[in-house]
Image (cartoon, rainbow, N blue to C red; front, top):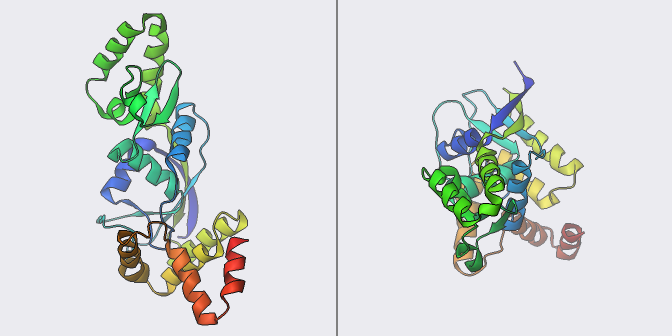
Length: 259
């Protein structure tokens, strides 16, 4: 039965599911584009229990064939991210993999990106070590001894920081809709809010019409280009260029993309 439900998902289960491949990104999604500074704001919002937006996921029939971004595979039921990819990837990269190094200052209750001055600071703690480490109690004790005047603040701030993994993100689930429905939902969300360029929407539609094309052809080409030094090339730009060449109207197409 086609319907919508609303659920809550803890951050720990979201990033764990993404790690295992049971929460996946379909190939029609654009690339990960968030800058580290934006990830810091997301983490800070979660720390302060601010709302961070709702995820939209698609839970299709098991026989529905969908091509995913990346190489992670999973058997059984998969939740496909229609809206919320950037937030999910940001949480995964910063809280699970540590590819985005974020540090926490429990005295000022602030987060920042890894820097030399931060690494050498006794009051800045690696966020991923603080969340996953088994010796956080000794870290807390050492910090309290170094800054006795802020003992109670440090105690509360570290416990509050570790609660980031228990933060609940609201999630709307599309049950048993078709792949075309998922594409349409993706398009309408991003068109109504003008959050994506038209070329990104075109990428999604192309992925629906030619399942596997983006993963098998476009993504490897982008990887090859970036190895050659073109590290700011995205699939939307490639499709825009191809469209300009095919229609012999580059000025019109590029102007519409920029505007």
